[in-house]
Each structure stands twice: as structure tokens, then as C-alpha cells.
Length: 138
Image (spheres, one colour):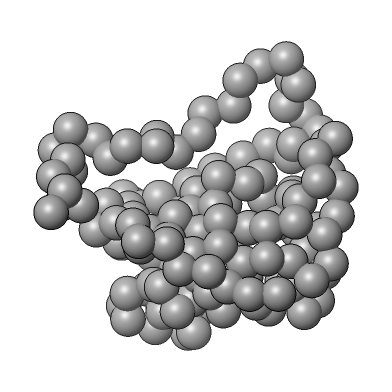
């Protein structure tokens, strides 16, 4: 199984041990390209954990990512870590996740089981905000 780089800066990790979760077969984890916006949001304390950051970068729920088996968990985390800027890597290595204003951590999202399955969960936008448009258009 391979880790595939796409031309937009993302990577896909084909899982050695696919699994089923919430009626969906998970056999690959796609990691979106890291934007400067992700770095700024990390520094502002918008991510409670590195798993929360991974969830945003993959578009997967945290509960789905928690179901990764080894060695797939190591492979996905290593792929994300390899893509991160050095400052975020250093924070994760030292366990220093930035806090928001007034030293507050963002509230942890409710477990997936508490989410109404009929409701549409907010997701990371496919396209960057208007102010970020053009950085990949070359």
C-alpha cells in the first residue's frame, strides 16, 4: 500500500487494514494540503489537539480516525507530520498545543454519537476563503 502525493499538495494514504465506520468503508485517508491559514489557526489555539487538526485536514470525524489500526495509524500520522510546518511539528513534539485568547482551549466537539445523524455537520470548505484564493493558482 502506498502514500500517493497529488499535484495540489495533498497526500492519500492507502490503508493496509480497511474498516467500516458509520456505514462507510474507509480504505484510504486523504490529507489535504496545509495552508498558511491552518498554521495561523493552530497558533491562535483553534485546535484542541493534534487529532482535531488531523480531522480538519482529512475531512474525517475524530471517531473515524480513532478507529485506525496499526500500522495504519502510524502511517497516517507520519504523513500529516511530514506535511506540517516545523513550528507545528515542534509544538506537537513537546506537547505544547497553543491556547486561544485568555489561555482558553477550544471546547471539545461532542462525540459523534451525540450528533443528530440527520443534521449536516460543518466541514472544512473545499476552496480557501476569498482572501486566500490565488495562492495555488499558478
